[in-house]
Figure 1 (cartoon, helix red, strand yellow):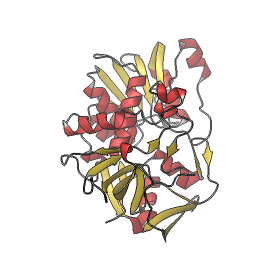
Figure 2 (cartoon, one colour):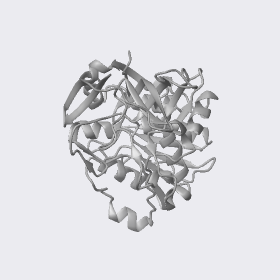
Figure 3 (cartoon, helix red, strand yellow):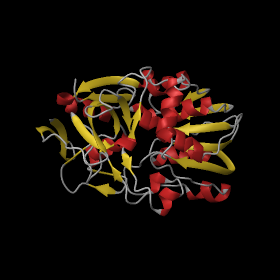
Figure 4 (spheres, one colour):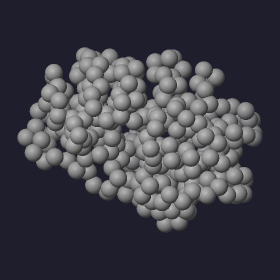
Length: 334
């Protein structure tokens, strides 16, 4: 099979590799679509992400859609849960599978991702997808799962005012989930005009650009009890902290380019803010994402802005770096 191997920052190579052989309990999947996300961007640009650093070549890609290739479920379309948690540790038993320290995670060092024609993965982590969800939309179900988890951390309620700093794909799906939850007013801050337009299309009431220094200093009509930082930037965190009221929550969703968060101490201390941190999604969220999209509650098609063949991986990552559109999708078997 062909696969796209990351050798170092900016160094992608299309190579041949042996077809994977499923282990007991696994199924072979023909990969149809892979979404590129912020952590992939960090790996490609910096050679690191989320505190991990490259120790050798590996394959990116954890937003995955495919078709089971062999066995009794051959031909079934599936969304792939990329995190294989141990299901035995204290975190897993408590339902917090996203915090399992023994997790194998596709697209991270030590566990190759899905920018390949085939992959083998545990059958229990392959979620059937109805025909109402297109092939290019399936990878976004993982992103929606992250948004579902993030919104849960915000403890949002109907009628509540909420701020979202950053309107990349995760930020936009947070907006869609907030609208589905019936919040009262959604204010989005985002420097790119096409992403502000997408936020409005997905249900935001207001979408504004930050000031030249990157921090949105506009006076909000109502200080929000909750803000979501989905940009992974110092300016995004400062915007979120400035937008919430005393005692508010700032949910940290974005992945920073360094190993530290830059939290404005004066705002955080004066307001007594709480900072829940979103990491991946939990076990039920991928199925919940499938259900929401199938029911028409959350639209995904408008987020797919460009598709590429595996051989055009360099162009796909170049578009990701430029932030030309919204979601870049690679089709390994196109």
